[in-house]
Amino acid sequence: MATLDIFHDDAFSVQSLTKAINEQPYVPGRIGALGLFEEEGVSTTTVSVEKVGETLALVPAASRGAPGQNVTGDKRSLVDFQTVHLPQTATIGADEVMGVRAFGSEGELETVQNVVNKRLAKMRRRIDATIEYQRIGAIKGQILDANGSTVIADMFTKFGLSQQTKAMVFGTNTTKIRTKVLEAKRLMEDALGNAMYTGVRAFCSPAFFDALTTHDLVEKYFINWQSNETLRQDARAGFLFAGVLWEEYRGAVGGVDFIASTDAYLVPEGVPDMFVTHYAPADYVETANTIGLPYYAKQELVRMGKGVELEAQSNPISICTRPRAVIKLTVA
Image (cartoon, rainbow, N blue to C red):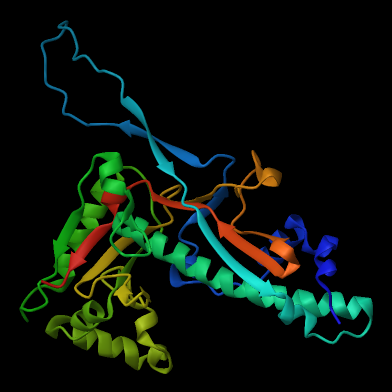
């Protein structure tokens, strides 16, 4: 029979459990799969982003020999973001361990590790879904808590900016959708300034994607796109139109869609440091002042030795450093 003493083995130390949860097969959300967000560990719970306010102006003409226009330095300021503590706990009762018949000590350790790893995998999936939710929030400009209403971080408030939007007017069959898309891309490029990008992607709600692909001036192009090699694939995964890769984004938590049914978000790809997820260290003595990892796990015996309590946690903050370069598109 397996015993609770087995949890004193080095296989269940914070280092070993953290390694185990980081090695779990990753089931990413769409944003995570695309690699849109750069990932970086930090040694503190606060991340600072330097904001440089730069304005351009035309140089007025002056007579030769006259003094030139005074050019002042750019104003710099630090914008702070607090990492978010995402703990998950689980208890493995004595009965779950004591009820396992083991064959030798090594088999006993392996069997108990399987119980622990299954529980860690379940906790990690919940953390992954939360990180995906927060990354979508960073793209939209506002990261919300799990309740869908409490604001964790507002990119526009933090940077003192306002969101750019473009109404696509799908309800009118004569609307020149391609022109609307180009106008949205120009807004994006103006916000990027001299920053280069490698592509443009639009994350669409299902209703927005349907409205786009069934519009009179888009549908024929969409059908032709499907009739080619992509006919054997799901076109919702990507439809190239007007230089933008449009895709239907699936995601919901607690019955609340990650992207509202009337919206889509036009995002530049390949812009350095535009989308970043920072990870702070766990709140353990062992991890203080170390570079943060995406996931941590630890265990300890509960009172009177009646079981073992597991904790898995992540401490991320996802940031969009150029929120005005993400253009919110609306159906009407």
